[in-house]
Length: 222
View 1: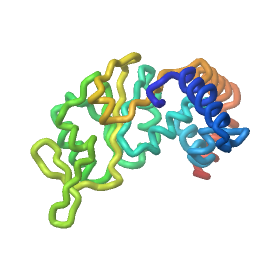
View 2 (view 1 turned 45 degrees about the vertical axis):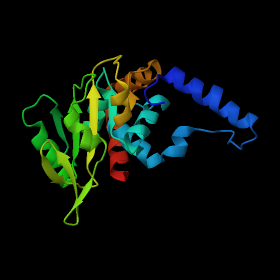
View 3 (view 1 turned 135 degrees about the vertical axis):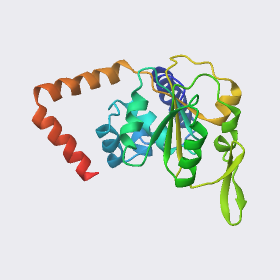
């Protein structure tokens, strides 16, 4: 449900899925919370400290971005996902590139080989077929090493490699082919998320010492 809005997710999860499970006699926790189920407090505080909003919808997006096996494509018109991913991986040799950059394949190959994260910004509704071997993780064993084809060159595959896509389009119409290759995650800002962000801004302005002390404390614990 990552591609859907907060209202649709809530309806599917609480009005449809949970009620159906209970009707079938399947045990479900009374205080069921998918965010608590699929993440830890340490994870959440780390994400928040790096700029992820605190509402459940944004935290669900954080889980989807970090835990899924396929690479993710973020619908991100306000560029919150872009900023959060950059903050989260700034100490992990993150490279931010555009698909139209002349040296894109070079940086893609280096990121794969050295197991670094790569963030691709300003993606449209179309993904270049040159990415298909990477998105499909078509890994080949050569001389005892995992390799993948990047353009016309075989590159050693490091399992730590992470790939993120972000689009500024608020309502993109991706083809089934694209949706089958990546996980679509809707980061469009919500009223609840905006309220929390504005509250944090006000607190940081009115109580800057306390606000920055708590943030630094969280980061040191993480």
